[in-house]
Length: 360
Image: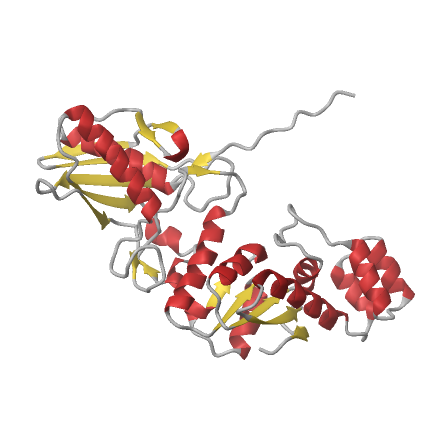
């Protein structure tokens, strides 16, 4: 039988890389060198990339270039978005100034990589834009002084699908990316948002944050805890990203809520709770049931790989959900290594808290 070839997932480009390409092209056009198409840019770690221009317009004292973001095979909300850069001249010696155009947000809360009042263009993309404008300026024999306005067509609507509003980024998207390259299914943007959420909560002096694996468990947190929006972190499947962020910037209390299957994975030591990265550890679950003196059918079902929901139903009133919560709490505390107290809630599909461990 012939072997099936494994298809390699295609890498893509960050919004920061697209913005750098558009900005370099616009700067070159403004300096009299015409719009390069494609435009080649330098990215960190020695990577060179070329981008086709989707827009090239200029007038007296300004030039605009646009690049369509290709996120490769990553399910990125900004895939296919038109990233725009408008460049105008700045006074000699002024360097590069950044502005938020249509679809790019403005920072309103402390704790993010850029200060409140600034456009939500992260330090990595700012450096990429400045470096590539410097390259274009050297080739043209002019100074690298410019005002660069970055926009994303339809960015305000796209931002509603992100965590930006909760992070205090209003009016649009963030321009992100440290390497310029998007690795498929790395979920780097989500992990970045989790880290930023913790940073904002710490900067605001909050003493209690809550994280959820999904909407149902977050709704349970909202009903029970009087916490402001910046204290609510959409962890999703990325338990490891949340715990590492809190280990770096401890906040006194964490309440973590999720469905029984997700938290059973965390209880068994998994940090990525998505089905592509981890599965229910059947042997672990069966052993836990034995320790709880569970009915034999429940132990057999767990050993055979039945769903956690099925096992819970077969186990009856033996405290399995509480035991999962306790083990998940132990996993979280081990990663945090002090500095944050942890409570864990197991939430069923109806939104009822069926298991608890810890205070909170």
